[in-house]
Image 1: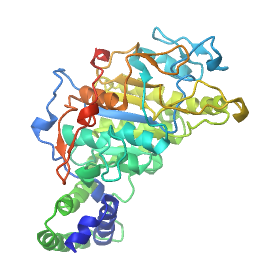
Image 2 (image 1 turned 180 degrees about the horizontal axis):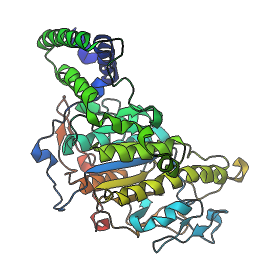
Image 3 (image 1 turned 120 degrees about the vertical axis):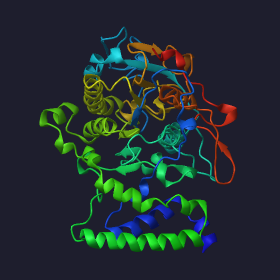
Length: 437
């Protein structure tokens, strides 16, 4: 059985323990949690910045957000199409589709020189989240897992990493173990399901079941003394901690005033941004919120306008809310996507745009980033970076820099292979340090 357990994949092992927790304790979220194993040395700021950021809110524009129709306008050129620019609170223009975002541009650093070699969605998302290209022999940890592993959990009773509305594959902890994986949530208003003792289980029965589970765990761990099993040793303790945490209410956005919820937008992304604010306010290190629908091969301009309306309201409300609460300085907010869209407008596809990994945009705000600036520049048609190209590895290294994490620190997989938050040694990311104030 020992060999069979080792052959099991990470999701299979996790599901086994989810089922065990549900059967014995009446909860199912526990195995996605886990205390940080990060030592103080691992969490130590390696950049010399006095006040590293404490949290990351990562807004994933899944599908390939068109840079030309959002943050990298080319006015007067055929590649621009019908989209016009508008003035912002900073010294640059952005798309007319983002009027609320224009109001908070003074908090933003727009990077218009992102570049990647991955032109397919799954591979592009993988590299965006892990700094590595996909391999058949290993699953690399996502950036959220790296942050929790190297920075440590801030609130020991809540998960360190939460993913809202996204693909669970993007929240993987890879070889690090399930305690660093993102807890996946679907609808923000549903909160964290199965995180309370079932009403059919009394407290006495719960304690008895817990004692039985502890006894079974002890025997199992002694018999199958392998790293994958050890990673789950704190399973039930973590579940009980979560269930009894006073901060569990952070997952309940229904506690927010109706006016606040409306300000974010009554849609999954907007409410996800509100949930992200509540979670980081309560000590969650890394929250990812996904907005899909950016794959605009057909009718690009109609689709981008609709997606921008959702992004615009949620993002602007998030930055304003964080700023008003004094949280923006210690919370890095990232807008990122796997690639951009082609400068060529495909008329036979009702003015669509195809995949374009060679050049695209992302945006950083808060977390010590200087606001109201641009970094990098694309060429005259937005086809390739013209100045200061930024790769996925560089973006993740920049996130690490903001958090006071050494992106080059090596962690070893169970098989002894070295890995880094900033990618493989031969293509190790370089943080864009000049954008920090």
